[in-house]
Image 1: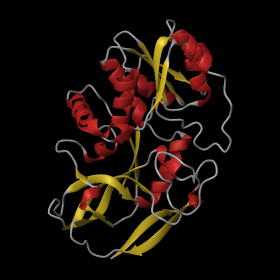
Image 2 (image 1 turned 180 degrees about the vertical axis):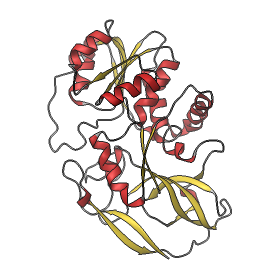
Image 3 (image 1 turned 90 degrees about the vertical axis):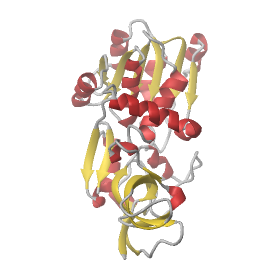
Image 4 (image 1 turned 135 degrees about the vertical axis):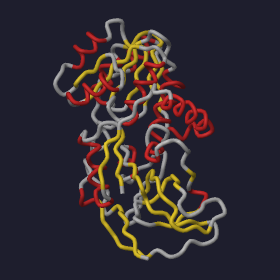
Amino acid sequence: MKAKQIVLATRPIGVPKFEDFRFEEVNVGSPQKGEVMLQPLYVSVDPYMRGRMSDSKSYVPPFELGQPIVGGIVSTVVESNSDLFKKGDTVHGLLPWATTCIVSEKEISKTFPGISPSYHLGIVGMPGLTAYFGLTDICRPKEGETVVVSGAAGAVGTVVGQIAKIKGCRVVGIAGTQEKVELLRNSFGYDEVINYKTEDVEEMLDKYCPNGIDCYYDNVGGNITDYVIQRFNRYARMALCGQISLYNSTDIPMGPRILPAILKTSSLIKGFIVRDYMDRFPEAINQLSIWVNEGQLNYKETIVEGFDNIPKAFIGLFKGSNEGKMIVKI
């Protein structure tokens, strides 16, 4: 059987380009004992994958040149040589960007009944888990506190804001288009939203956070984070989740020295990777599922159709093309 796969052709310099990816045709055999053959239904593209395209030391190894890119995928089992899975099962895992692949039964899990398959790549998948643990374990928001979220209209930010509202907080988001501003206010319950491209972020932070900031969930970094930290209250907590403003930088800029502000307010900044919490995934999935079923969590997906459009969808993440979770439907 022939299959198409997408490999990393070159390591991107700056924002990824289509030329950094290459489509290849490969032969696919039959699954051996303990293996299954899969075809993708939904492919997740996520900002963290940009880091794996660079040949630098990180918390996960870089993608290898000439090898398929791997990410979160929901697939259907088309042939099985496993006692755990049968033909027709819907599964998810970290899988190659390929129209057909063979993997070990140990690399996949069945999707949860009653939950949309694509949600396993979003609200009950990596982005939802990231939002849950970063907010509840690091920020630990208390009722009445002010929570600020950068990258608020992304897959993680939309969930963070809603959980903060469930916890009884005042929530201020930061996003980059007027459409995203309205979406966050009208669909995700944000009290206020700042458009960082058209508004003075410092001025609007002073307006929307007159009593200071207690919790900050950072997906962006850069100047926005510098501005937020200067408005921290005493014992503020910051979950350092992402730095998308810097992922494509060839030189990391030197921002204001933030340590004096952290010292003066006795604040906490903690970076984290969602896999730090693997032993608690069932807890988070259960709670997120309850909130979804109760209607307390809304969820937004930006759907791009077609296997050949996976690179386009990925590149779109760095141009602000997505509202909520970017998904490619195959």
